[in-house]
Amino acid sequence: DSQPNEDALQNELLFDWIIPNHGIIGFKNYEFPHVPVEGVERQVQQTLKSEWRRHEVVKRTFSPLAFDKGRLPDDLYASLGAYWYNNRDVPHVVHEEWGRHKGVFVNYWETDVNFIQIPWHLKKRWQRRLRELVEAWTGVELETTDMYGMREYTKGARLLSHVDRESTHAASLIVNIAQQNVSQPWTIEVHDHADRLHEVVMEPGDIVYYESAKALHGRNTPLQSGTYVNLFTHYRPLNDPDWYLRDNPEGTPEPLIDVGTCNLVGKPDEYSKGAVQCQNSAIGPHLSPSMFTATSADDMFQWWKSVGPRDETVEDNDNEEL
Image 1 (cartoon, one colour):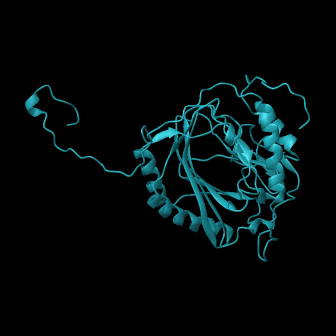
Image 2: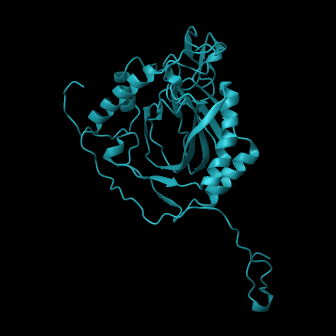
């Protein structure tokens, strides 16, 4: 009987068990007051100019669209999900360290960004399993370079479009671990090889493969509610830190550039359901209903502004050309 009985003699404890679990405890928490950062718009413009140049430097590609969506094997998702569940509260959760020295990629001045550290033995196990998935996607033998997370985003979070480190982040995975009280889809925005915007909806256990040093990616639309927990893992071709300077080897899938005429056939807020259809169906179901294609860093900046909070105020009136 799960309910206490008024007769104390009948309140017999049938079972008492403490479930042991791995975890890392944070002894100190970083505090970031939610105050406006001076010159945010100017910093965003400068950052996007840099990221645009960087994404043009990478020569080698691995896939037609620079990304794809998949699903974790059940046993691996269970392992990741169990670790998150057992470590989702303080003292295992701490604020991720951000600040001026790390730029404006995450809007830490407006919302908390939390972090759950992972023990090395679990990292090693998960990295091996995840690498097998990415190798199958790229068709290339890879080596692990990094695993980051688990990162917990909170209401209002935005992630500025960017590319990752060229020498180490050739092919990567975003793993959605958990979502709590998320009322609207918070899409991962990925630009393909023709710089068309795709907005991908993820559910817990979903993965997104992406060429993270080549394909601009972010989450510029604010998270409307709840928390959203991701893990990121990164790989590169075996023993080749200069992979990004090389031409594609024979047999590499051709980047999908021309897909013919495209039309919006769904709703403007319908994501990952084929709301945009093109003459070449190989474009897939994730094209943004906005049908936005970037041609410059300025386009990226205008996108960032257009999808931001409606009450966002301009803190920087500096008209200096950047």
